Amino acid sequence: MPNENQPLEIRSNEMEEIVGQVPHWIIRWGICVLFSVGIIGFIITKYVSFPDILAAQVLVQAKQQPGKVTVRREDAQQEFKLLIKEGQQVTIGDTLLIRRDTKTNINYPIITPMEGKIYISYGIDEKNTLDYVIWVVPKTSSFDIKIKYSNRGAGNVKTGQIVKINLYDYPNSQYGFLEGKITSILPVQLNEQHQAYVKLEHTKLITSNNMELPILSTMQGDGEILLNDRSIFQRIFGSIL
Image 1 (tube, rainbow, N blue to C red):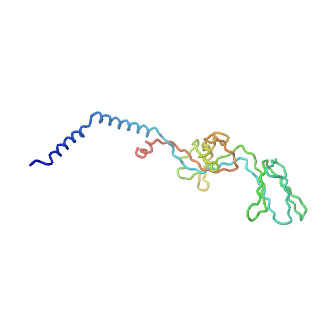
Image 2: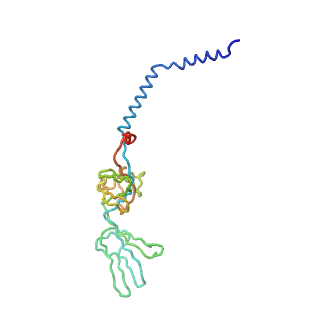
Image 3: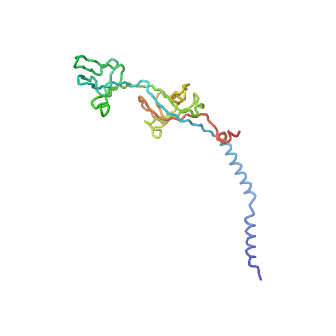
C-alpha cells in the first residue's frame, strides 16, 4: 500500500531547500547595515546634546512707573475741580485738580511730581461709582527683568545662562519669545524662591519673530532657564560611568 504522506514529505523537503538557501551577500549586506546603523546611533548619542530646563516665573517692569491720584469724596463739604483731561500731556509741577473745602473755604491743589500722559478711570468700584483715579503714565524706554524659580535644581543656575521668556500679554505662538542671559543672582531666598536678573541682547523688547513689543508698566510671563548641555550618551550612561 503506497504511503500517503510521501508526496507531502517530498514537497516539504524541496521547500526547505529553497527557503534554507540564504545568499551570502544578503548576510554580509545585513551585517554591514546593522553595523552602520550602530555607528550612526553612537555618533548621534555622543555628539547631539540638549540642555536641561528649569521653569521660572518672569516679571518685566518699566523703570518709569505710572503715578496715580485717587479722588474720593468723603463728605458733602468737599468739591473737586479737574484742571486736566483724558489724553493730556503734563509736566512736573502741573496742577491736576483743586480740592475745595466749602466748610473752611480753602483750596488744596494737587500737583503732579512727574511728567506723562493723563488717563482717568471713573468709578473705582461698585461702592464708589462717583470716585475716580487720575493716572499719570510716563513714556518709558527702559525696563528690568526679574525671574523667580523654585529650590529644586536651583544650584545649577549660573550667570551667563540663557533664558527664554514668554509674556502672557504677547503669546510666543504669535509674537515669538524674548531671549536674554542671567546677569546676577540674589544670594537670599524670597518666599522660598530664588531670584535672578536677566538682560536682553537688545535695549528694546525684540522677540524671536523680530517684533518689537511695547514696554508696559508691568508684564508677567513664564520662562525657561537653559542649564548645562548634556549629550544623549551622557543622559543614558552618565550614572553608570
